Every structure is written in structure tokens, then in C-alpha cells.
Image (cartoon, rainbow, N blue to C red; front, side):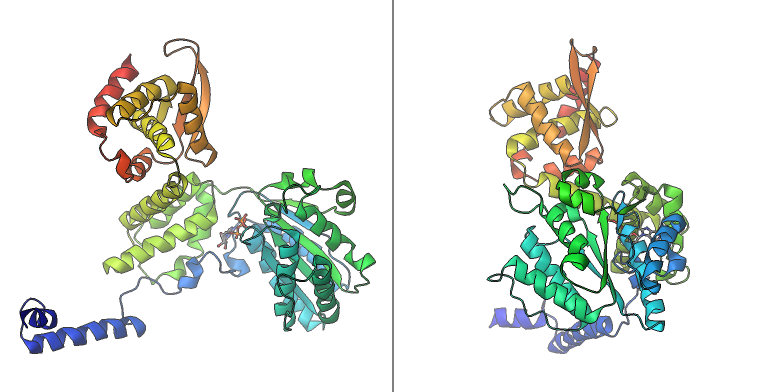
Length: 452
Ligand SMILES: Nc1ncnc2c1ncn2[C@@H]1O[C@H](COP(=O)(O)OP(=O)(O)OP(=O)(O)O)[C@@H](O)[C@H]1O
């Protein structure tokens, strides 16, 4: 009976109070659903990196927009636009600019009675990277644009049949169609095949008008961070695929400021503290000049402000948003590592912490041995430890450099962290097998070894 009362009245308050708290619970939900909660956002879509913003919000890409517009212009003259290859680092506006231009061309084409559209597929996000799945996906997306049912099952039907149905839809519904093929290099196909799946896909798409008797003006826009994928094209694909290349470079902090300023109205008036956009841009510039990451960081900072009930996004909100972004990224990289790899990386991070982000391999190895002895773990050779740490480098936590002379003798490696060392240490120490390590005391040992 007592426990029942406890459940109902929460800390022994009278029943009426209990009813009151129930009401306030439901009004919290109502407030949120009715939008009556404190928010710093006015138009949150503008800080959603998947939104295709209008041309007046695109900063500094006039050259690329002009090249894309010149290519697509052919559509309006009833001709086939040239194939395009957009290349450059992540988040530099490749997809944004081409979709913005394609949307504009679509409007103009409609005015002239031309059935034009574009179909965008990202191959990296597909669960299987085979040609068969790629053709299925292109068919699925094309059918959606055409407003028809894609009646082809994923399996049990040959790739040729999928191509045939895809080209039927293209021919029946469009005068002109552009396939935007994002991250095409991910389309590697089955292992052991004599050419990558993307090579076969590009071959087929480049020959469709002549060989499949399709009247639609069909062209491709390949979007990639890795233009070298062309080196692996089969020779017959290589000779029939000759795109116009358009390069996109990464952004510096000033360019990111311009990009973010054009989205300031995502927030209510006065909801951004002075300096917020600048600090987001500075973090973005450190993160390979990727505008997507900068926009995501600004939105995350806004969400942190909302959760705290603050009417203004402050620089501190940006810092904590950045800390959790970095932490998640590091966690993704180190999460699946074996304990030996974690120990090696932990030793490197402990050294780097005392040495401005740089960790010479002989000192790292000394610390690694102390860690192994302290936790009763087998000690591996220095070569293995270096290779374990270098593995973390391939995922972007650090870089290594060969240095001659100096410590002891000969050549050694220096590991330089590209992610904040504190975040790496925090993330690694979440592994319960590393929790016993007395990191503070080791700091003194590290300093002594570095002096030696
Ligand atoms: N010059 C720019 N002006 C305004 N917004 C931009 C600009 N460049 C990029 N963005 C924004 O940054 C985000 C990423 O851009 P986009 O998707 O075009 O990158 P991408 O180069 O195609 O990257 P990926 O190679 O990763 O696909 C989008 O939200 C986009 O709106």
C-alpha cells in the first residue's frame, strides 16, 4: 500500500499535487507540439545541410555555377549537355551548385515545354556497391521523377532487364535527363571483377542514346572527392567518357563566414551572440574547409542553446557543440579498435599532451611499456606499436613523420595529432580496460622522458 502511495504521489505530496504534476507533464508535451517552447531558430531548414538553398545564398562559386549553366544551357536548345565531372573535397558545394543550376534549368525548360529533369543518386549510401544495385536504384529514382511505379524487384531479375526498364521510363517521360552520380567511386562492384562497376555503368550511360535507341538527351554529372577513379576505367569506357572537369577547392575561414552569414536568418533576430559565426567558421576551416560541417556545427550550437532554454546562441554553445562533434568522430574511429591498438594510441596521446600535440615514437614506446606492465598486458615490439598507431592515422586522428637524429639515435617517427588530444584521451579512457591507468602520474614520467 505504501509503495502504491509512493508511486502515485511522488515523495509523499498530497494527491492534488500529484494531479497538478500530471497536468504539467501533459502541458510540457502540448507546449512542445504547439511550438510554444523557447527556440533560437526562425527558419531551421537553412541550417540543415541537405537543403538546396537559393542562388543568392551561394557564396563564391560563380565560376563553377557559370560552367554548369553553360553546360546545361544546351538542354534549352534541344541538345545534349556535355557530361560533367565535379571534383574537390567534401562539403565544397559540388552537389549544391549543380542541383541549384538544374532546378533553374528545369523552370526554364518547363516554360519552353521541354520535359527536363535530373535524378541524383549517392552510391556511397547504398548497402551494396554492385552494378545491379546501382541500376536498380537509378531506376527507382527515375521512376519517382517520372511519376510512375518502379515495378522491378531488387533481386530475381537480371541487370539487363533493369537497364531495359530504366531506359524505357527515360525514353517515355523525358526530353532531356541528367543523372547526378554522387560518390561514384564507391561503386566498386563484386571483388574479382575485371573492371569496377562504375566503369561499366558509365559505359552503358554514355552509349545509351546510340545503342538503346533512346531519344532522350541523356547526360551525366559525376560528383567525387576522388577524381583518380578515372585511372581504373576500362579502356573502352575511357574512350567514350570525356566529361568537362570542374574543380572545387576547400574554403578558408573567411569564405565560411560569408557562407554562414547568408544563413543568419535561420535564427531569430539577435539570437546569435557576436563572434558566433566567426568561431564556427574557424572550427570549420580546421575541419578541412568543409561547409557542411560548419553548417551542422552552427545548428548543433543552436540546439544546445534551445535545450538549455537560452534565448541566445553563445560562443560557449559552439565550443560544447564542437567538443561533442569531435568526441563522436574520435569514438567512431577508435570504438572498434583492439585493446592493443587502443593502448598504443593512448601512449601516443599521453606523450602528445605534454608536447604540443607531437609524440616521438621512442618516448611513446617507453610509455606504452609502462602501460602494459601496469595492466598486465603482453608487450609488443616497437614496430608493431608504431604500426598500430599509424593505423589510427589512416582514419584521420594523426599524421606521422620520419625524423632523423635526436632521440637515442637514427631515424624515428613523430606522431602529430590532427584531432584534439584531450578528446582522444577522454574517448579512449571510456574503455573500462584503460580506466585503471593513472594518467596524471604518467604525465610526470612523460615530461622526464621528453627531457631525456
Ligand atoms: N559556396 C557555398 N555557399 C553556400 N552554401 C554552401 C556552399 N558550399 C557548400 N555549401 C553548403 O555546404 C553543404 C555541403 O555542400 P555540398 O553538398 O554541395 O558539398 P559537396 O561538395 O557535394 O560534398 P560531398 O563531396 O561530401 O558530397 C550544403 O549544405 C551546402 O548548402
